[in-house]
Length: 173
Length: 167
Image (cartoon, rainbow over all chains, first blue to last red; front, side, top):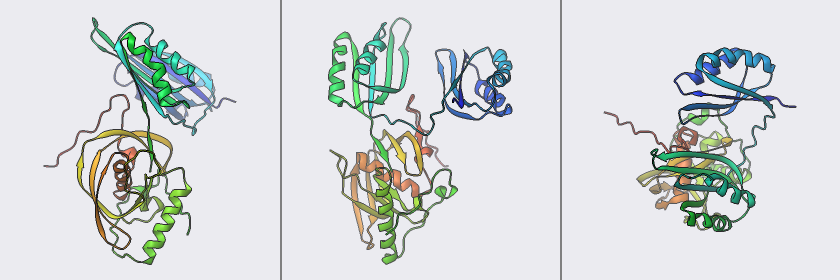
């Protein structure tokens, strides 16, 4: 039984989006869970877990006026919570190279073949419009050795893509 | 011997600054034995600090000797520890017995020189690097009422707080 909603909001970036949206949700009696909020290009993106005690219609009604005013598109899905069960990454894969179509698919296909579970992927396009550079940082969990993953990815370096695999060490103190 | 209760966020006592140890007696030895038992009872912690169990004295235990290929000084009981020199910095991911189900990236010095007393009050100086130095810095923060969540930096931008100079 889904007890949470995943609220997605996307629109042109401007100051005040987060405060307006979260105030509206609070006023409607919602609790917030984990979230990813980040500027991608000129857009501000929100993926936000909202407790599902309020009916979806009520939640949408609370957010819609703010979204319309700020020019945000909204999407809402009921989801299971799954909180308090963080998976801990043990490998980090850093990739960069001259931007070309297919880098992400090439890298992540190889990772998937090795049972690599991506927990987080962030990517940026650096450089300038004439010479874009693609930079990607992946953290995940994989039971295969770092050498196996490295060897599998090394084929990509002949295609001008720099790939580096490093352990993620977590210190618990 | 006893397993002690670990204070967890948001317990305000974790922000308390601990006092120096002045008496090196049986009570101290008994407490450190309990602290070590508590460390070992939890999830694979390489260190623990006295204030994490509600005793606000400057005592930490660090042991990274179980980790492969890691320079270390073995099992360390550090009483009244003081870092006298820092160098370099690196980002690493940390978690904490007092902050369950959360890990974050923290910048720490890569090399430190440290003065500390042992259970008999004898002072020793250590030069540490890497993972062991990180563990000591993490534990010593507890003595000053700081948690790693006070120092977490963004994964994306690897920012660190600009140092504020007092005039």
